[in-house]
Image (cartoon, rainbow, N blue to C red; front, side):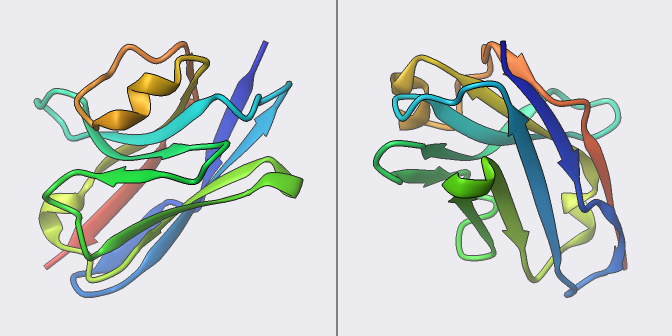
Amino acid sequence: QVQLVESGGGSVEAGGSLRLSCEASGYIYSTYCMAWFRQAPGKEREGVATRYIGGGGTYYADSVKGRFTISQDSAKKTLYLQMDSLKPEDTAMYYCAADYRPHLCQTTAYTAYTYWGQGTQVTVSS
C-alpha cells in the first residue's frame, strides 16, 4: 500500500514561485509512474506533469511547459513540483498520484492512477 502526502501549497502573487512536495510511504518501485494533477473549482481534474521513477522521463501539459519542473529525491521518497512564473489560472487544488503501470507516464491525459494524496491548495492572485 502506498500513501502520498502533499505539502507546499499557499498563496502567491502572479509571477511568483512555489515548490510542492509529495512524500510517499510504502514501497515505490522503480517501474512506477508518479504525477501531479490539479483541479480548479467547477473544472475537471487535469494532468500537469508525469515522471517515470525508474528512468526519470518526464512529460508536461502544454499549459505549464517551461514554467513547471517535476523532479524526485529517491532517497527521501519525495516527488517535487517546482512552479515558476505562476499565473492566476494556475489556481487549483494540486494532487500527487502514483501508479504501478509505467505507460501512464507517457502522457498527462491519463487520470486513472491507483494512489492519490489529499491535495494542497495553490492560489495565485493577479
